[in-house]
Amino acid sequence: MSQEKHKGPAGPERPSARFVVDGHAIPAPPLASGLYIVATPIGNLGDMSLRALATLAAADLIACEDTRVTRVLLDRYGIDVRLTAYHDHNAVRQRPKLLAALARGEAVALVSDAGTPLVSDPGYRLVSEALEAGHDVVPIPGASAVLAALVASGLPNDTFLFGGFLPPKAAARRKRLGEFIATPSTLVFFESAPRLAPSLADMADVLGGNRDAVVARELTKRYETVRRGRLAELADDFASQPPPKGEIVVLVGPPVRVEPDAGQIDELLSRLIEEHSLGEAAAMAAKETGMSRRALYQRALALKKGGDDGAT
Image (tube, rainbow, N blue to C red; front, side, top):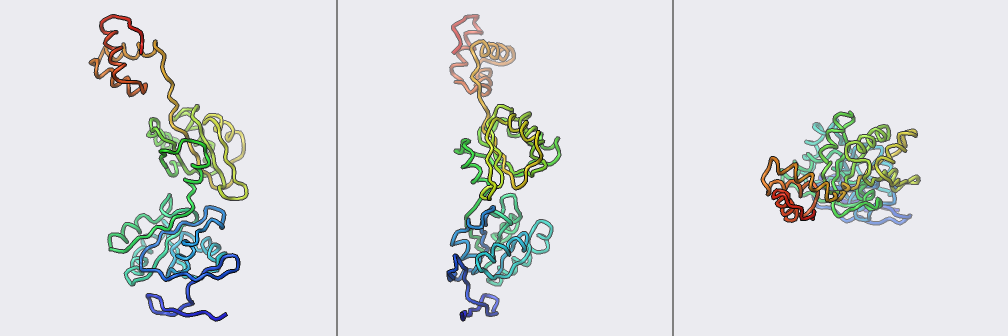
């Protein structure tokens, strides 16, 4: 089969851009110059959008973490584009070369080994400097381990906080977790298999073992598993077995708020009004219990006067 030739921004001729799906060759429209942030599968190579394939096929250059990993994906879809490695260890050296390609009017695609680039992957500085230099940056959305785990977890997803990878050392990890104790959102972390058990133990200890939690492993792959339970239960389960294999996402539900009884409210307010004004005591108690500040103020006032109107 003869292939048409076209000239890219740099000048040399190369076969017209195309990709192959189920044996069918599909032409890829030319790309305008710019940096294209292309999401790739997190495991299942079938999770590629047609737009992402067309973008990779039409790019003049693809910057990737590991050329061997990206080559497997490109071979699956019959894409033949020049690759260059771009990762944490060579970014300082490679970034000027990629910016120079953009300055020549080329279309540069950035991919990570899996999922959406810049999410716990290199690329932030490249995007920042490309924008600073006046180049277009175009997101090509797709697979994301964070969102895949979140929607499968059964945990609240109206608000969530992505914490990336926790520190490997226990003291630093516990300190970092301490920053999220009162965060009223589902927490999402990436974790390595060897550190999963100690991380879960620290989460249970620092965040509270009664929180709902999920360990999602090998998402979109053949041995995908999603384990749900209380944080303390999951910590005990994974501590009693060999470290699991594969990529892991840990999700922890929002704090479990326990409504205090009348006696506990009175005890809290009595302690607070010894050192604070009624307004300050009510505000502090409202923050701690989640109850109405106005109702707590009225109860504090009754306690101050020595009355016993009943806790509200």
